[in-house]
Image 1 (cartoon, rainbow over the protein chains, first blue to last red):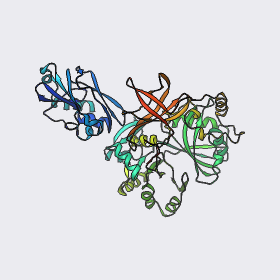
Image 2: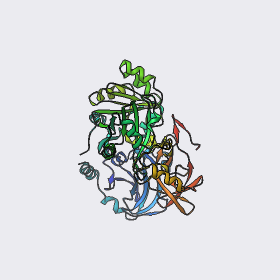
Image 3: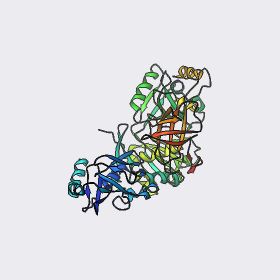
Image 4: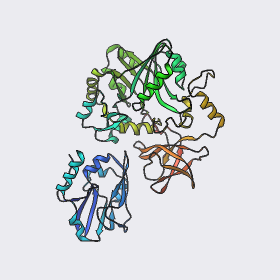
Length: 131
Length: 363
């Protein structure tokens, strides 16, 4: 079973979103997603200062198996990226919700976070995918 | 519905991630493909390779049949038990499949072919055998295990029955020892020492469990792929197929043109290719930049596209990405590879990248 923290928000492309206050959110990929991908060996992150759009490709995670796009779950500006992942992409497998975070976004619309899927809805989405 | 090996329930019980492969439901990994890869490089791992097909080729005409249908020459096998790697070609010189053939007796050979190509191979061989004194017997009653790594033979030998244990302990590389329905061969697909075993399906689960109890790590198809890539070994369907000759797939060394009067299938086409010259080269690539090389990415010399990657991935032993590529003859010792619109720098190297746990390529 995959871990789905109840305090986070989610999107259907298997990214999680944490509210850091001040209109900033942290984004990563879920435990379910890292298990499907397998051992991660390379991560390509967006540039700090770049603009991202909801549902647009903004990062790539590569596992031993394949390359997968990461979609921004929100619209805004990249204000930080997890540079530790360059030398330790396996951190995403080991700790997807904390030290395996990918990037932080300053929201263009602070209300956007509230409209995202909650943990219960995401659990149902994963269950439906597994059927 | 995918077919299941005799060890399917073992894989599921271990929590393997199962995937369809060549018509079979097979383990991709049992948790971490990287840990499995490292277990084989440092200690021992076991792979269920029962999806591959063992095929007995018997009869007074067996040797002549194999000398005609295989591009390598079984006449090179003089001692019973010796094995040979070979391609089986189309008349046009394309690769029908790659395989291992074991010489057991003058009228008794064992061939092991890939899973996905097995039905095609059987049809092809049956057509070629028409009129010859040869019987082809698929052995789906047998399971096959590959136990690989520096500690592999030490783990396997104590589990074998007395006489087979002694014979298996004495095996030279690329030699096999039969005992009843069992066959133990000192062969593999990882670049490490180890053995491959064929044994009756009914005995396979107990033997599998005994290997695990002896500390051998169960390994899936994922680790099998990264290990063979590091070891510089081709994968059928990716690195070669019916559209390309072994001479442009890094497999020229497996084609026996001597003696000149041996008329094997595909010989004429390969000789014409050799005369024509200007063959594409099959090379190894080592990525200097960060990133991961993958099959079908394009290879460039300056602005000029010169070829394509056939297999690529992350090499755990090197902590770098490596690949095989089929490229124009004039390639130098550097190139770039287009990855998501960017050109990443790579070095052209000669596989294998890794043997017996050691990197053979300077990083």
